[in-house]
Length: 304
Image (cartoon, rainbow, N blue to C red; front, side, top):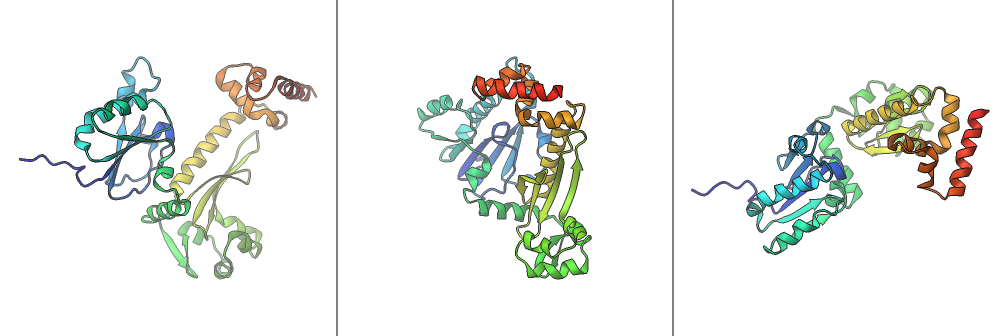
């Protein structure tokens, strides 16, 4: 009796190094099957389509003495085990690493061509940004709660905060900038899903919804940081922002000191994470004269 091969109906196999190119789970074409390689499966929050599989290698990683390049080695090992089932398939490794060239050369000897794509899953599947956004939107809103107002679909959490006057304004404008001009100060804030003020640094992080583009935007002090059609994506990025900036802010005893450190903040963070002296860290990114000037200006500011 012939064994069932679940890959028979797929033309393309994707092997995605999520530790390297990110954890975004997309709706992929029906003729494609994707393996998402992760070291912690709880990092993935979305639904998993039927033509996608999560491969958690955390147990494999524990058994290694040398942790460097563990993901690359596992994907190669996984590929070598499965390759006989995937003849006549287009096989693509999605990773920014170069360590897959060796296994590609080995497989070429068996007339098996493995392609490598150095970018994200999004970039591989949807070169067209608008197509990507629409697919993400369709995925997210299969389970979301919305209400249609003047032909515009609005999330319930936002509808519940709207006055009748705001609802009447929606159809008169085509973008949030024009809409907000005609709203009261209180009603302009209803599109903010959530916000946090970080202690000490006084940084402000929020999630804002655009009812016209149907996108959520995570902002850092009002500046664009991340945009997605998925509320869960936005909440995840928002949470990471808050945690990272809170940890960073704890390094400073007051807002005044944080403000003085702000011009060289990235270098202070690099110095803190690597254990290198601050001046040495700055010299890695600028010439010594510039590093010297900025470093001692900071020291002088602290003494004032």
